[in-house]
Amino acid sequence: MKALPMFQLNGVGKSYGMTAALAPLSLTIEQGETIALVGPSGAGKTTLLNILAGLIKPDTGQVKIEGYPPAALPPGPKRSRKVGIMHQQFDLIEQLPVIHNVLAGRLGEWSFFRSLFSLLVPQDVQLARAALSRVGIADKIHLRTSRLSGGEKQRVALARLSVQDPKAFLADEPVSSLDPVRAEDLLVMLTRLAIEENKTLVASLHSPELALRYFSRIIALRNGNIYFDRSASQINSEELAGLYILEKEAIDVESAASGKA
Ligand SMILES: Nc1ncnc2c1ncn2[C@@H]1O[C@H](COP(=O)(O)OP(=O)(O)OP(=O)(O)O)[C@@H](O)[C@H]1O
Ligand SMILES: [Mg+2]
Image 1: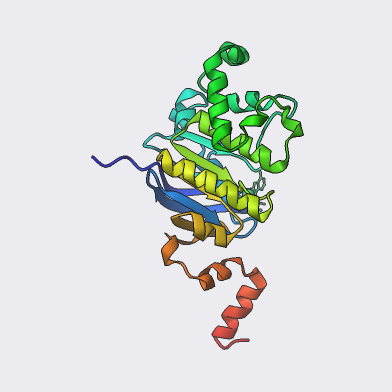
Image 2: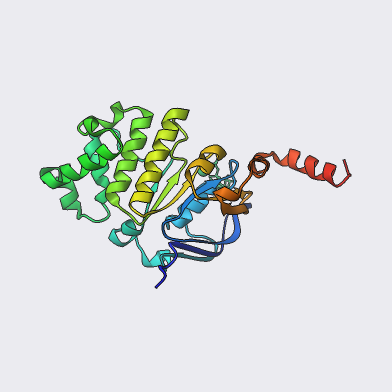
């Protein structure tokens, strides 16, 4: 029997006042796909990721997360096993040691009491250490999080996501604050983790090159609409360049093409 799609969106739209953040759109994301969401600033990438995570309720349409409407997955264990999201600002508690931030990935599942005292249980330390090893910073486990570099914090956020162990990883611009080498390094880790553990991965990125290199499907948004949605192997560089062309230039190009310039 075929697995249910990880995400199914049908006529999903979202506006903020007069701004249409997302025009009604429909798409299906199968389990195990690795998808890069690309598009200019304001295209609707963060809005779409938050809708997939069940954090924003769309104004129109239906969302299904592995067959469940988001309302059937209230924050807590059921939702945290399905979707986990890395926000752009990582959402780490700076004053706490790294290990606390990593184990916070289990907050959805553990009782508050257990979370509070989790450090007393050796297997939890093991769990955190293993997750930090996978992202190459096991030696930082007891450091105060505020003492880490931006790149290391991003790795802690990734370790937390792996401890949460949801079926789908969502990441909003996971490499935006990193230099090119570290950005690539983090994407290698993120995509390897997703592929090895058969996760669905949807990440927004500002680099079309990295999107093409590390993801199998590219969904491009522009003004809240799907501009294209295709396998990475079927996208050429002109299409990607067209995605980022500014509105005025786009009008000029179109009118020149139709002989009206
Ligand atoms: N909370 C909000 N209140 C009002 N408008 C919003 C809100 N969130 C998003 N928008 C608007 O919705 C549109 C889509 O925003 P969104 O953050 O999804 O874009 P994005 O593709 O993630 O952009 P960026 O690449 O800059 O992060 C933008 O026009 C934005 O100004
Ligand atoms: Mg955004």
